[in-house]
Structure formats: structure tokens, C-alpha cells
Picture 1 (cartoon, rainbow, N blue to C red):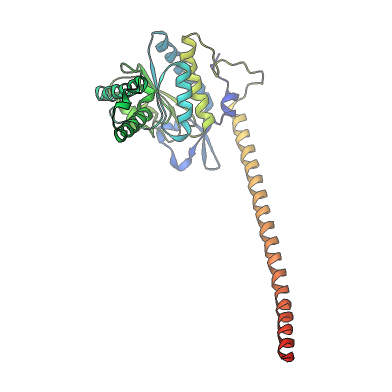
Picture 2 (picture 1 turned 60 degrees about the horizontal axis):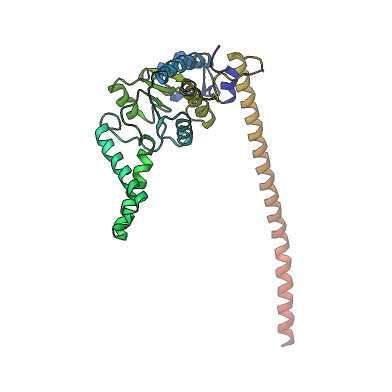
Length: 304
């Protein structure tokens, strides 16, 4: 049994790729069709990739390995932090600092500096410094926490890395590959799947899509630790669907979006027409008012 149903992937919008002009030819095998200028990802391949990634990640976690989740794009930042904290993993969700893996000794020195400042705050010794220096030290701590807070407890290099968008965090992919660290990631239609050891074809732009894909792989770590699963192996009483049903759903959604677009256009046109009519009525009444004013002025001048 697969870790997730195709219906769940469809509801999360995982089947939507990029525009057809923004595709990577190496993703041809994972593309089912093109509709309205958008590539549709073959969810059968996504399920197979998820099953493989789930088993490998579970094996890493069972051997005591630690995983680093990376997602610095805006849509992924909150999801990456929440899922990493749920499984007790590490994360980077702001900006990937060059050398985070390949020059980890330098990164460790900055982490030690962050821990030192936190201890100064706890003991109150930071108040022994002048006020201006305290402000600078706290700003330094805030910056370090922003970039390194998710890997503060990482004492050694991770045993695996999961990257939400390999295009956005290309440096993280290259550093992990250089150190022979297994790389998991979401492979959208504009991504080169050969860069990843375990590519998962899917939408890496929508929040719901990112949440489901990251959550399923993260459930492998949670299951290895005996926790409660939130996304993987969830029962679904609805009948299973195929890629033909996915294409039908895409066409129906496109038709619904077109209907809404036309309705908005008609509403804007009606509002513009009503506004023009009010302007016309105002223009018609304006000369009459001016004539009345002129009559009053003429009567005043005659009396004088």
C-alpha cells in the first residue's frame, strides 16, 4: 500500500507544474500532459517516488541519523520550521549561508557565539556592558538566531538533507552532493531531477503542496521514533482515482476559473457604466445651475 493516495495529492495541487515554456527536458518522463499552457505532473510517478523516499528516510532515522530540512522561499519557511520541530530535525528557512555544510567549522564558531550571548542573557552578565554595546550584541544575536537558530543543536553534519526547491537553494544541493550526503527534494517541472538522489515530482510553489510532500517524508522520521503520523498512511474512504480523473479535474477547474474571470469582468464593466451615467447626469444639470446663478447676479446689478 502506498504512503498516500492519488486523491490526496490531487486535492493538494501537487499535479500542477510550471508553464510549458519554463520546463526542464530531463523532466519529460514525469510530465503527463500539458493543459492551458501548464504542465501536469504524473502523480503515479510522484507516489512511486514518495514510497521510495519514505522507506529510505525511515531507515536513516531508525539508524539514529539526523535530517536537515531546507526551504528558504517564502511559501516554505513556516512549513519547514513546523515539520522539523515536529520530528526533532534541523532546519534552515531564511537564507542558506555559503559553506553551511562544506565549511561547517566556521559555522560552528558562529553558533558558539550565539550560545554565548544566550548564556549572557540568562545570567544577566550582559548588563555589565555599556548600553550601546548591549544593543549591538543583541542585534548580533538576533541575526545569528535568524540564520542559524534551526541548526543550533547540530553537532555534526546531517545524515540526509531534504530541499524544498533545488532551484532556489542550489548551493545547498551542491554542498550536500560534495560531501556525499543523500539529497531528497521536490522536483518541479523546471528542476533537474539528476541533481537529487531521491527526487519527488511535484509542485514546489503552492503552500498546500509543500506541506503535504514535506509532511509525508517527515512522517517517516516520526514513525521511526514511534510518533503519530499526520500525512502518511491515512485512511481514505473515497474511491481511488487515475490520471484521467486528474485531467478531468484540471479541465473543470480551468472552466470554473474562466467563469469567475468573466463574472468579475462583467461586474467591473457594469460599475464603469453606472459611474459614466452618473457623470453624464451631473454634466446635464450643471448648465442649469449656472444659468440660475447668472439670473441672481443680473437681478442684483439691476437693483443697484
